[in-house]
Length: 537
Image (cartoon, rainbow, N blue to C red; front, side, top):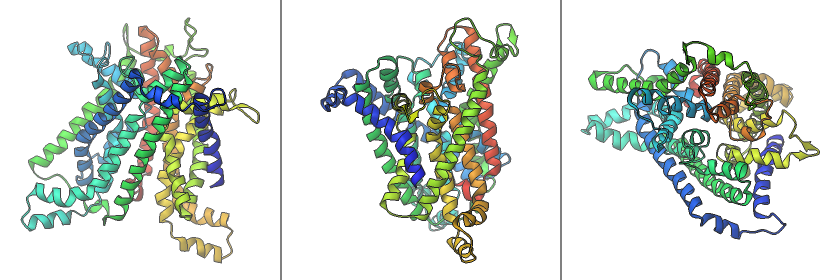
């Protein structure tokens, strides 16, 4: 645990604590009165209220749309199911900036709905809510569907034999078993939407601001660190409560059920009703997931003189505005290099943490497990800004170093590595390690010859997830990426922030490239997916 603890202490706890310290203790004396002053301001109360409201609305809408999909993937067997599973998971690993861009192309100015019906949703909250459903659809399908596929259907069939109607049997037998998984999925969706930044930044504009977006505004634009520190503490407390509830629901799910292999529960649809349900889910996937991505691709080719590669060619040259010090196309190479470095860091740190959590027990280790999840919920904006004010003196003067970006991205990748590898490591029979030790193998050799062959596939999947999320990290990177080395999400945000058809088209082209890279990574992960890991998200 030594290296993971040191990594999180230096690159997570220190920057966050420094921001809070500078905000609440500017002259050496603590000023806790600023907490009450800040939280009583009408504009801050509006931000907090809207953040909670949109998170609740996004969570409810996501459950409403995605639960039928979870049932279809759990209980039905149909051609192309594996490919469709990968397709619905693609949005989750896409950068939030890209998701906002895709919906901007669909419902924004000169978007598809604007051209066809004169309808624009980018000026309303509906664009934010739909983008959140698009982004979190896979959370519900993977979390709830993974458990649903392993529930023994014979229990519900026995209730039907005893005279219960189909709905009563589902309500009294299946629903109670699914409640922990549904609760866990709802809490995760609420967490991701509560801390939403990129989607709100692009689609909300100045009309709608969440807590994360307000922290960015207070730090980057207004340089008001006291307000930013208070908002960071509020977000930290909320995220801690959400993660505590999530851990409780996961423990209930792990201990309360008897599961069967997924292949024993899926079958081809029967009857008009089931085929209609399958068709409805396929239609919702087409409209909610494929349509925004398709419009994004179409806009990247639709130039002033017709369809072509004009916007893609423009990515290779500088413009006269001076916004970019290098051609936007160089952001692709920058992102790939940063993501590869971040993946290597995340795999090492996350792999060590997962191994420690596997072999040790106790409250301290369980607390460390919860700590590993905090970077997913704590403001990435705070972490990025904290990097700038803490890592500026020897021996850690990294502000001019390229490694600063991969370090920030690795913070987001580590939780995915841990969550992917932990179930597989826990499944390794301890007697195999003991047998290797009895035969004279050192701990390193035992791990290399016993654990590594068994977890190699999970390790590749974990590396793939870390690569995908590192590629799309935006909240922290927007602060620390150097002007001459922008990443893809940062370059897209800069292009969208400038007027002009050329800038808009280049943003669509860069977003399409980023989407293709993320989609290819996920499809490779789907090929590596095993039955053991199919139920894990």
